[in-house]
Image 1 (cartoon, rainbow, N blue to C red):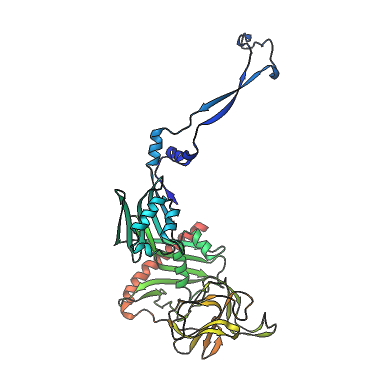
Image 2 (image 1 turned 60 degrees about the vertical axis):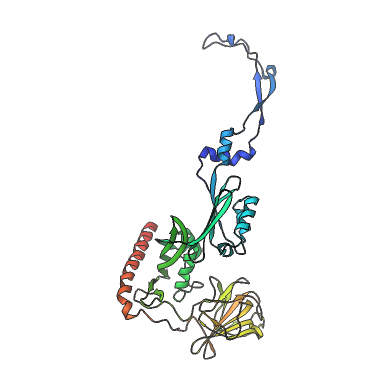
Amino acid sequence: MLYTSISSKQRILAQKSSKLTKKSIRWLVALSSIPLFGIVTAFGIAPKTPSFSEVQVEEVVLDLDLSIPEALSEAQTNQTFWRQESIRRGDTIAAILNRLDVSNQDSSDFLQAARSSRAMRQLRPGKTIYAQTTADGELLTLRYLFGNEELFLMEKTDAEFVMTEQPIELESQVHMKSGVIRRSLFAATDNAGIPNNIAMQMTDILASEVDFHRDLRQGDSFTVVYETLSSNGRRAKTGRVLAVEFVNKGKSHQAIYFRSSNGTDGYYTPEGESLRKAFLLSPLDFTRVSSGFTNARFHPILKEWRAHRGIDYAAPTGTPVKATASGIVAFSGVQKGYGNLVVLKHNGKYETAYGHLSRFAGGMGKGKRVNQGEIIGYVGSTGMATGPHLHYELRIDGVQRDPTKVVLPTAPPIAKRDLNNFQKETQSLVARLNIMRNIHLAALE
């Protein structure tokens, strides 16, 4: 992406300069012997109208000098540009500098000067690097927000790269957006101008209330209040969701962010009930349920009717699989028709199983403690599987149960000592949700 402040005329010249040379333009000039004095009055008639065969045609070649004046050419060379590049998975700083159109010499010099930089060793996918360069690729400034709100700043002075890494104070701004689902949730959030990070937070917050795999309907709507953090007027990163409402099949689900007096935080209903369930509704993000929990399903490999004591989620090979609840690895290995299998033991009588994995996440040995939402493996088609999918089971006292029909425990509600503060914050945030919802609905009518 390229930003510049040059005028329209200079910008056109900057874009065309590499192609502007002296060009020969051919002109066809008709030389006629028609006598001008043949016209006597305004209504006079020429004594004879010559035919085209009598017109002499001569080809004249003229050289037109289309080169840029020296003063303009020098001004163009002195122009500077701000460019930005998002960090991709597996990126190196050398690759990013190349995409930023930094010259080979400055790229080499910068890599040498920044070889001990912490920031340049923390290239996180999704984050953005900004660079100021000249038209011929000289690197003047480079900015990168990394780590825990730290700024890497490089400025070129006297042909040397001066670099600093320091914490910065970020300013918070609150945004409110609404949307309606026509095709998919992400298409709707994109249309509403909501960052992907905020969309993912919405699904995580309401994962225990809405099954985003099977329950979304055309016409479902959402409203979200969220924050972004800026430095010197430039957006540095998206913050957290402060409040969200999702209307699914006509039922409203609301969540409010709150930090308690003891420092713990989470999302709650306006009545103060925690939305954090002991188990997520799904171990995958946005996939398709290919087989549900049933007592009679025709097995595609065994070619016989038998019970299917779990839920199958169709997804591409390599899709990350998350632990639906915190627990300890009870089994990690190959087991008959399950193929690569992970079994987690949770508090009390609960277990979850994840089968047909293509591979395990690092360190998934027996006895390892994992947190809710932590990646434990990746979708595959090992064992008795006709294609890549995840087989997921919820077991209670060793018996498989339908996870969509079991009432699962939740986290404690708001403590009494925090109720007054919570109610004050809830009122203002719910009011914002109501305002945005009403504005959006009015705009649709």
